[in-house]
Image 1: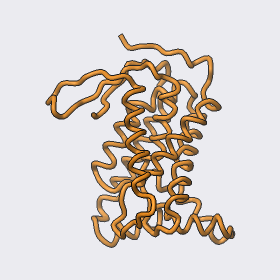
Image 2: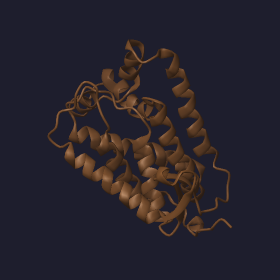
Image 3: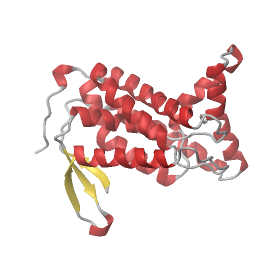
Image 4: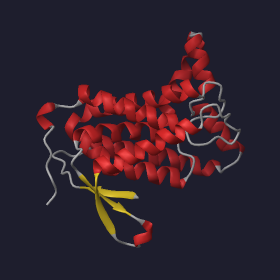
Length: 233
C-alpha cells in the first residue's frame, strides 16, 4: 500500500517540511553524476553514517573524531537510488506537513533531526561492527510516522494499491502505520545475529528507533493548542 494523501487539513504552510523534501532532492541530483561506482561509494563513505566509527567514537571520544558525529546528520539527506528517494519523500509529503502544523516550524525541524539520531543510535546498537555506510531519511520519516500516530490516530489515509490499478482506498492511519511498524520490527528482529555483507541492506533498526523516538518525543514537541484535528472536505 502506497500512501498518497490523508484526511487532515493543515492550517499553516509547511515550509520546513517542503524545504526538507527539496534538500533531499537536491542532494540526490548531486549524487547522480557520480554514477554507481567508486566515486559514489567514496561519497557515501565520506558522508554516510558508519556504525563502527560511531560506536568507536562513543567508546573513546576525541576532538579529532567529532566529524564522525556530523555524518549522523548528513546521512539523513543521502539516498541510494530513485526508489529509495521517491518512497521516502512520498511519506514525508503525506505525513510531515500535519506534524509540522501541530508542532510549529522550528520545533518540527528539531524533532525531525532528533528522530533521525534516535534511529541511527538504535541501528548502531544492534549493528555496531558494520562498516557499511547508513544513508537515507527513513529513520527520520519513521519518527514523523510515530508522531502522526499519536496526533492523528483517527485520520484516514488514501493509499494506492497496485493490484487495483488506478484506484485508491482510504484506510485508518492507526492501521496503516501500525502494520508498517510491525513489519519493521519483525524485519529488524530477523537480522539479529546476522552479519551485514559488503553490499549492505535495509537498516530496519533505524526505522524502529526513529519511530520510537518520534512516538515519545511528540509529547514534548507538540503544541497543545494545535492538537485538534481538522478534516478535509
